[in-house]
Image (cartoon, rainbow, N blue to C red; front, side):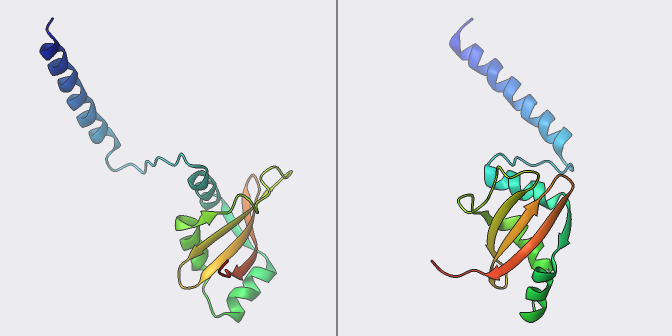
Length: 125
């Protein structure tokens, strides 16, 4: 079989494979979260979230809405150098993001719940 025929069959198979994947995956909420940052954020977003009294006081005193947490958990950055990823039973993550104000969240990520322990305004370093 000539090389041009092999490439033709390969291209045809690749085309039909992509069309089938597009057909089956269209309309489904599929995502490719493979980086450590994206995996941690997705893990926290999927859990029930609760707020400590300190975090609720921060939002009240700064006249901010708790919906900022959802925005930060969607587009934020996890600071792994400050986070405690080997802590038992719950890991502590520091997540920073900018929505209306540059804020940093301290989140205790347990098996079934994510507790927003502390929120503070992010200072430029």
